[in-house]
Length: 367
Image (tube, rainbow, N blue to C red):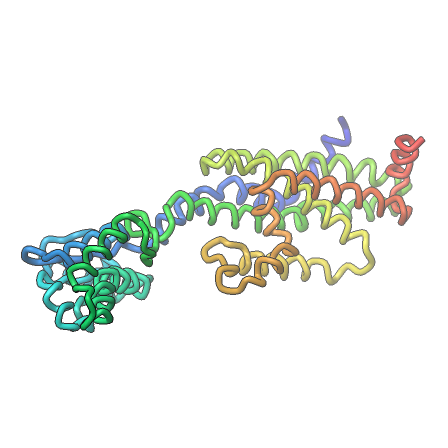
């Protein structure tokens, strides 16, 4: 009991640990709504007059892609210019006549907001909608002069398109956003929690405890120093961090992330303790910060780089902050990883002879 109280006293005099602990608990305040505040405004469109069959199909495709419909072109331009809409499309009511004449270029008028974030994406949506209705005109022209009439081509094309037999380029959105708010908020929270746990487990757990144990070993036997400093401090600090994670996951409405976070914390702590047993003290903090920065860059927090560079999927598996994403998908990997790190930690301490207390534990277990 005295050892636990002594460890608690050391925690109260450690501002770094307390600040990081508060930071973990308050993560949902900063990142719980991150997806909603960063998600761009939806795009809009207008079709003045009575739309013909092709204009109606384009309007339906735009609605399915997350566009909102407005009453007039003037209203659309006003909303886009003021930034309340990310982009806008003007669909002509006589689109069928234009496409029949081959006037596909500039058939739709596209407007970008000066504050647009995804203007090119909305433009691709509009182009996909336009070419989905222009495709049968291209096919009909290729059958010109044959026994197949244009009416037969259009009839067969729309039958197959409506029946789902033809491929159509689509990008799924929800209310004009590429990713639902809840999913984007989850990504931001998961990424921030992984980075903060990784940094906390080194600078607020492993590093200060190892330093305190080494200093205490100058005044008492090493086994007693580690038994009185390292083990109680490690237990108490991990419990406090676990409590902060539980509060954060509860506030973020992500209770399923708590167990993966705890497993990751064990993996991070074991990794840092192993690194601190190795010779050299100057390279470890630098390596931790570099890996944390790599985690920010490679983890799928905002954009998944593996979609553009497939090799990123392989590389980031060796980046510790990404382990939370892996464990969240399959908790079994976390149990295996945490157990492996703890076993390696004990084995390395046994081989190096730095902990007589752990050696005795091994002897009792083995004998």
